[in-house]
Length: 299
Image 1 (cartoon, rainbow, N blue to C red):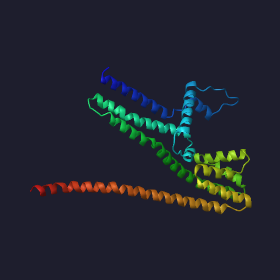
Image 2 (image 1 turned 60 degrees about the vertical axis):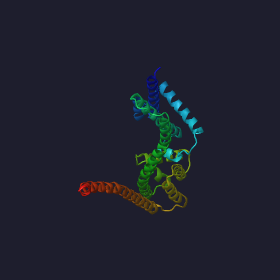
Image 3 (image 1 turned 120 degrees about the vertical axis):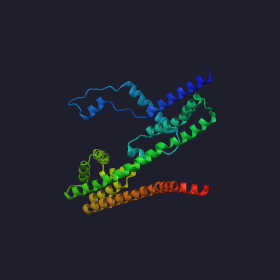
Image 4 (image 1 turned 135 degrees about the vertical axis):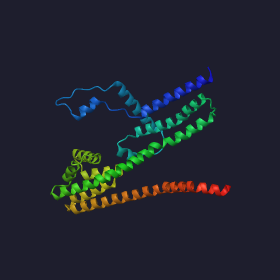
């Protein structure tokens, strides 16, 4: 067997492995039939629908591999951010492994292509580049989760400001604290108020206090605004205090904080744009002055 045949086979195996990793990392599209049945459930007893065997086996295999990684892979898992984004730790670690394997295999594929074109590449080069790329891509999911969680918390803060106003309006209508929390939450349709609806419904089912449930949710997702809402409503329930002005004041302060954060972000973006502008101006000045300097040197 010639060296070219061996390189072609190695490249094919590496490409097949890379395609398998990418197919496992990308989530599959939902099936149309079950999605439509969830949107409009039939009246009466629903028929039993058996899930496809291949999809069930694939999900079970992914869950098993994810649990194995959670138990054995060292490092910190951002559980609060994952809970906020409604992602599991198993899926997070599977994504990290997929990115690392992609970084490890990509230099092999490129080196195989160069070798087929007659370019000699030392064996050590793809190995070192693959290890470095795998180490770098291992942390890409961490950065993605941190960035998405930051955006989600900012979006939740905007929704919480509106939620505080709605709770204040319900409290002004002389309703109870628990009822005001639930009715204000059911007004919204976004994902933030949907999370509040779920936790309040669970608290009513468990016959526990809704402010304790909001406080626990705020601690789990690192959302301090929910703790503030819980403290205000707990005060109203315990002492019968009028919290309308308190809720409106907290909503106003939250909007001020959000506007200040947006202004700081806009200023930071403007400062980032100053460096490319200065570099472009320097390039233009060099281009204008270069012919004159060249004539002075060769005269």
